[in-house]
View 1 (cartoon, rainbow, N blue to C red):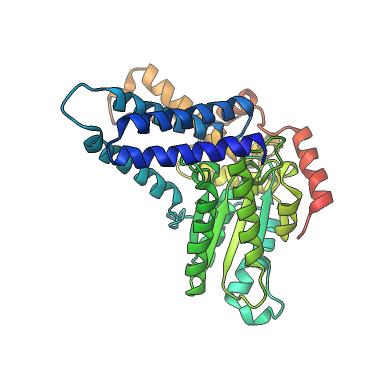
View 2 (cartoon, rainbow, N blue to C red):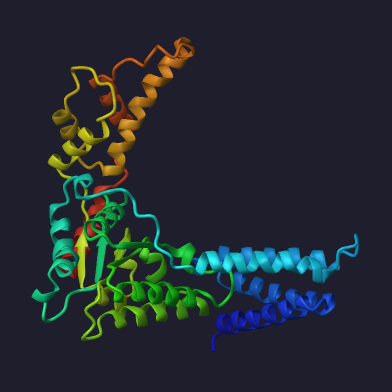
Length: 385
C-alpha cells in the first residue's frame, strides 16, 4: 500500500471511530480521534499538493476542526450528545445530496436549438436515437459510450441535453465535485449509485443518459493519485464495462465531454466507442448563432449577419453569445448614463453594426489556432465515428 493510500485509509478509520464516540457523548475520545483524522488528512494534502480534489479534503479537515472546538468548549448547558444531532444531520444531508443519483431537470432544448454541428448530430443519431427508436435493427447491439471533445463553449453540453429531449430520456449530469464526496471513501460508492439507479430506470423501459462533464478531471491520467481517486476510477471502469454486456438491450448511455481529451486514461478512451470532435462553428453556423442570439434585440437596419459571420471566424459559440450580450449592455449603459433610464418609457437605442464591430474588436477568440491543432491531431489519432 502506498503512503497516500495508507494515510487516507487511516484517516477514514479515525473519522469513523470519532463519530461513534461522539454519538455516545465521549467528548475526549472523539476529539482525540478527530484530531488524528485531521493530522492524517493534512499530511496527505502536503504530500500531494497538486492533487485535483484536495479541496474536498481541506473541507473535511475544516469540518473536523470545528467539531473539535465545539467538543472542547464547556460553556453553556448544551452537551456534546445533544449538539451531535445537528452535526450528524449535516453530515447525513451532505452525503445524501452528493450520493443521490436522481435525474436533473433536463434543459429545455432540442435539435433546433443546436446550430450547425451536423456531423456531431449524425453521430449521435446513429449511436443513440436510432437504437432507441428501432432496437430490432441492431442484432449486434449498439454503442453505449460517446465522447464529445473539443474547445470550450462549442455546444457539447447543449448537444447532450438535446439528444435527451429527442428520445425523452432521463438526464443525469455529473461532474467532479458531485462524484468526489467530501466524506471519505464515498466516491466509488457515488459512482456505483449513479449507474445503479440509472440501470434500474433503463431496465424499466425509460432511456437514460448519464452526462459526465469535464470527464478528463475524473478519468484523466494523473502523475500522483490518492487511493480514493484510484478506487473511483476503477469503479467507473467496472460500470462502463458492464454497459457492454451481451444480451442487455436497455437504453442506458454515457455521454462524456472533454476539453482535454489527451489527458484521458487510455483504458477509458477505448470504452468510449464513439469519439467525436465538436469543432469551432463554421461560417454558416456562426450566421445561425448571431440570428438566434439577436432574436430579442432591437437592431438598426445596417446590421449584417453575413458580415458578422465573416469577421468572427475562430470565435466559439460562447464567444458569439458574449459579443451579443456586450452590445446590448453597451446601449443600456448609454441609457443609464444619459439619465433617461428613470423613465420606463425610454428604451435603449437600436444596436448598430458599428457596435458589433467594436465588441468583436475588443474581444478576441477564446480558442487559439494552436489549441485547434491539438484537437485535430488527437482526432486524427483516436477518432471513432
